[in-house]
Length: 215
Ligand code: G5P
Ligand code: MG
Image (cartoon, rainbow, N blue to C red):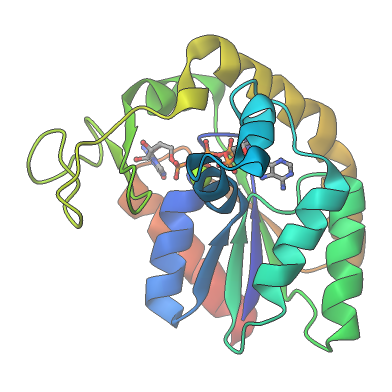
């Protein structure tokens, strides 16, 4: 299976991608996680990326496509893309690179969440600085408050989850998503998911859609 998840910041792409990968034995490729790992390295490239990510701006397409190419083309298993593609040039470049390798994208799931639910998700999101696992203080709390279940590390609030940056990220999403949705609608294999419910309920909907698509 080769699947891509689209949806606004905070819509649950990362959370659901993790569950899809566990259910079907796929590799989770989250563009944001890959970028944050480079950012955290403190290298000159990491410093440069910080200027985009922490200000809610998109990293330039050419760089993004090359970074994801390096991560995607070495894979022998199926994958779930989370956060990529995010612009029409990225979507087209992805189609080209997968087509050249005879491994086209098989399904695109578009997560739609009402704005009030999104705001609640941002307000309570906490992440592990080591493994990037995602939690929510109410709906997906860790076993011990403030501590990652897997790493034992102290959970943090993402640098780009400050309200003013969240607002910018949502506007950026609204400005760039329509052409991608049109592109994948025209190609087919495009399904919309109402992702406003609880995490477990959304997982059921998502896994069910995937099973039906591939049966
Ligand atoms: P990212 O890292 O790709 P975004 O903005 O696309 O960031 P984000 O914020 O990571 O997306 P998400 O993954 O969609 O959100 O959501 P999540 O973290 O799983 O869930 C959010 C919260 O809601 C959590 O607390 C979770 O517990 C809860 N939750 C999840 N699912 C559900 C549910 O079903 N129900 C309920 N009730 N709760 C739920 O990108 C970051 C930056 O990197 C750069 C850009 O600068 C970007 O701003 N970047 C790129 N730039 C250019 N091109 C690209 N392709 C780029 N990719 C990243
Ligand atoms: Mg994410």
